[in-house]
Length: 398
Image (cartoon, rainbow, N blue to C red; front, side, top):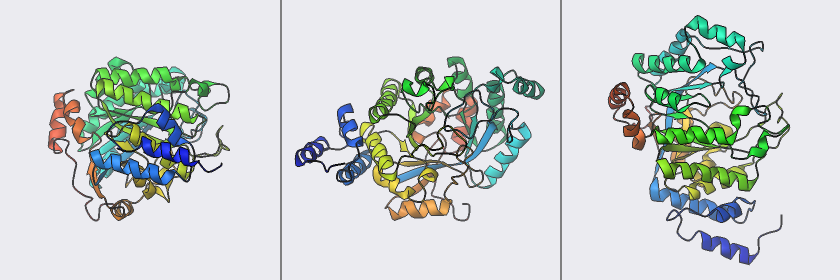
């Protein structure tokens, strides 16, 4: 690609004179996402300035256990190795005893988050899952998830954070009574990726309008919510920006999006997209920086294990949170990418001039919003310090 002209450099510089004062425009965001080794240092510089305006010197993370409640799923995304059909090796639905065994072990290691991930409504297509749920005493996967969230909430010191896929407004409200926050990745607003042999072919629950409806319903009911984008799955740079803008619009309307994840696609064997190119380091840094400049006051997160061994560079692009890190359980979505050791995470964060602080799964500024949904949540959040950011990493617990 040819080097940008001086006129291009002058225009780019003028667009970023006062970073963070106002979000950048769609046109500016698209321009800055285009590959340019010459412009990248300036983009990172202004992203850091925008972060400093709202999120100075502190980088947070949530110490968690990862609970794959069931990996049965009715969707077949082109990049996923988490999901299983009932007859496939590794297909599994956790029992309540298995859930609590992991939770208890997490308690002993200083975890405060129980992250529930699961396939989307597998009982609708798999009779075996319906039978499993019947044996457990529940009518649906969401009923079972609700019960497990309440069990964790009542019987442990951890707070649940479920990611159950598409939900009705009724189910959002039910789960909000037993979990202080929940999440659903928007991934993309591109309907092109639903086409034959595209990333979301044969994945009806990834239809953007359906996912936007869930995020909006969460906003209407003031439920602290995590969402984000998945880059490198076939979207254009313009579609990437439009997805970030859709998230920003939801938050401006309802004030409920506690964090925005910028996640990079990683190719996996035996998937439709096994040979697809992954976003490189510069692409990831540009996208994180543009997300910061589009949403200067919001919490921006990127998973460190998906950018290892250079994950500390993400701090240069303007993140203020590392997301959930587990000292106990693997990333079941990306099992080939282990979490960084917490001592290493602290060392690399401090080497960049920041303090690393542990937080609850619900961010401090959203704790009151979460506590309003049930007396049980109000009590549990108060017991954990009212949602305030927790202390630095205790030595010897990583």
